[in-house]
Length: 162
Image (tube, rainbow, N blue to C red; front, side, top):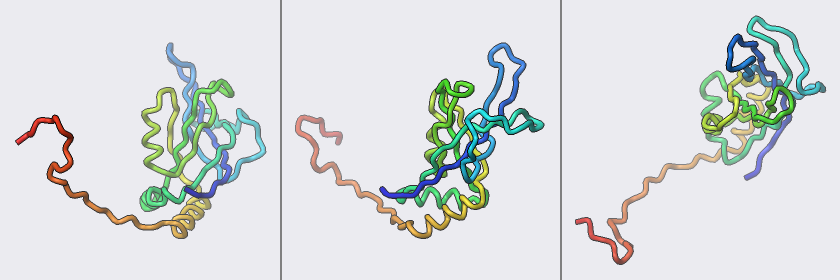
């Protein structure tokens, strides 16, 4: 499978919590179309919800075999990027693990133990690049329903169900 990639920057929101179980909460806040020359952990200022922190650069890859999934994401009218933060011990014990435009890959990460997963709006220039990639590489795959073989080819020694 071939593709294209670009480096993006990930901004997270850090909220202070008043809880006996956790002192703060992290969540992906935005993906920057280009990775700035900042160190991971650089504070970008305060918002009404908490502190905005640059978490670092990540590779955003587009794969030719996933163009149907990207098309589904773009068709929503408000395309998203999925960001997964993995426990690392770098900054705040988490680092950027993955940024993807594939909604099904993003959904599959929700079962990942220990991951902090969130969606962010897709920046317009990334959406335009993704749309051009889909237009150039998408090949429609027709749905072919398999036909049952009527039990032919059964292994010997198995009971006949009928």
